[in-house]
Image (spheres, helix red, strand yellow):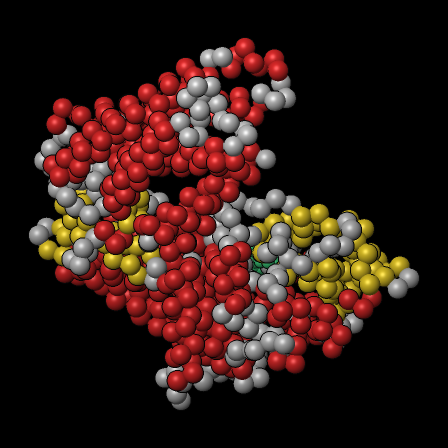
Amino acid sequence: MFADLRRITAKIAERFKRRFYGRTFNCPVCHFELAVVDAGSNRLLVCPVCGVVIDIEEVYGHAVPVVLEVELYRPQPKARIHPLATHVPIGLYPFAVLGAVLLAAGSLARPFLPAVEPLLARAPMIADATLVLLVLSVGLSILTFASGLWDWNRRYRRRSYRQIRLKIAFSILFLVLGGLAIALHASGAAFSPASGLIDLGSPASIVLAIVELALLSAGMAVIATLGHVGGTLVFGK
Amino acid sequence: MQFSPSAEQTELVEKARAFTKEYIGPNSMKYDRSGEFPREICREAFKQGFMNPHIPAAYGGSPHTVLDHCMVLEEMATGCSGIATAIDANGLSQYPVILAGSDDQKRRFLAPMTEELMFSAYAVTEPEAGSDVSRVKTSATKMGNDYVLNGIKWWITNGSVASWYFVLARVDDKPTAFVVPADSPGIIRGPKEINLGQHASNTVRVTFEDVKVEERNRLGDEGDGFQIAMKTFDHTRPGVAAGANGITKAALNIALSYAKRRRTFDKKLISNQGISFKLAEIMTGLDAARYLTYRAAWLFDQGEDNAREAAEAKWFAADVAMKAAIECSQVLGGYGFTTEMPAEKLIRDAKIYQIYEGATEIQKMIIVGKLMRMKEVH
Ligand SMILES: Cc1cc2nc3c(=O)[nH]c(=O)nc-3n(C[C@H](O)[C@H](O)[C@H](O)COP(=O)(O)OP(=O)(O)OC[C@H]3O[C@@H](n4cnc5c(N)ncnc54)[C@H](O)[C@@H]3O)c2cc1C
Ligand SMILES: [Zn+2]
């Protein structure tokens, strides 16, 4: 079951990657996966991980990269703000999601399991903590985003890499999803501020809670992808 | 004598080339690494009419001549000879049915293969009998209207995915050919063999334990099996040579593309004769192998005996491919030895062409057999 799930998600991720990256090949030196389209009209591409200058040509669908040069002086990220900042949102966000999931589970369990009632007394606190975590993780991701752009400018000289495009697009997406989730959570329309729970008597509240959970899960997928792609840029394959 | 392809052949080759560049070449490393059977690529090949190109029109096929087929296969094997083998291997088991099957057998076994993606396999080799096919031990014992088969077939291409097998077995001492549906009770498929190359192609052991086969699934008469199994190669060997030519073409293209761009001692690699002559030699070898292949195929299409010519094409093309793959890796230097570049795979893939469908030595024995019957060679 678990293996099936993994296979299916791997397949979806692979499809998405093909869509976004197009044809790829591996850097023959550090094995990082590079997109053929990132080579300009002169077919040249600098590997963002190891810095070799590659001339890429395809024959019969085989990518034949030729290493021409090594770019020796590549500025390190200043003060390593991006690599450090990036861990704050990635570290905090899952707990925000967990908070919302606990609140939803509590709301659903309440009519059937009276035993959970004493625990639910803490729901308003969890709802508040969720909001704080959301604001912190999404807010700090602005710093992560800005420092990432700065590094792209410095270390990667604004060159076109599918990975960085994907990171920029996903960062914006994360801000939008996170912003909406914050707004919804803070409004109290999904999880009531008084009880911290979903008002199961109100269809609007149920729908909005589902929307908030969907926003949060989508944000989780987006931030996990961002972290993964960022990691490959630092550590290679 | 005519050396230029017809307009239809050019069109067919261009279609195969486009298919190769889109589906085969870009996926060659992936399947080489995973060893997964390239079913999705076969499905696309099936849709585009590249599979089962031997099945006669009367049974739903749209057949190519063997020559056309060789030209297509050369293109596909340039992308990946393992995937090309997966796409093409049906032909080896279908041809005995085309050659010796009754109308009913053709309807039952060939026609369905034109309707949906299906595979079949040629199960002749055994652990103790490869080159010397006459040694096969698998037995077929007559019991009422059925035969009961017992034996082990070894290195069977498509063995795990086949819907039916062409099987050579002995009835008493008579080599006899059968078509055996793969879902017959008593058939045990072994695991996929981990071979040196052509990882996308599926090679397995197939064991027959008291497998009942109806008499109507016997091809020809009892005792015809050896002839049927051997005659098949006149048809398929030019195709095997074409596969080897695909490897040579891939090696040439990759080495050429690389040598034109890589620089050493302040000039391009290709400016050194030590390198460029290698390319000239591979090109010459490819042309020579191709013309041998095309002639063997053309003779078959004319209905003439091509046993010698097919043997010549097969061993020669295989040797050219092996040499070309090694030289390609040499042109790439260290990059020719790493698994991240397409050269080393060519070496691994080329080797099998010197072995299957009759090893190089066996091809030479066939040629010598023909020479023995000649007074002088013209
Ligand atoms: C990947 C793969 C796929 C295959 N697919 C199929 C398939 O689909 N169906 C099938 O039936 N078989 C298949 N085979 C089997 C293949 O055809 C045999 O391996 C091949 O015919 C050689 O037989 P052998 O391995 O028994 O070698 P042997 O017959 O033992 O020969 C060993 C070596 O000695 C040489 N030799 C043998 N006799 C002589 C002689 N008299 N003089 C000089 N040299 C000689 C041979 O050329 C060979 O080099 C496959 C094999 C492989 C590896
Ligand atoms: Zn690299």
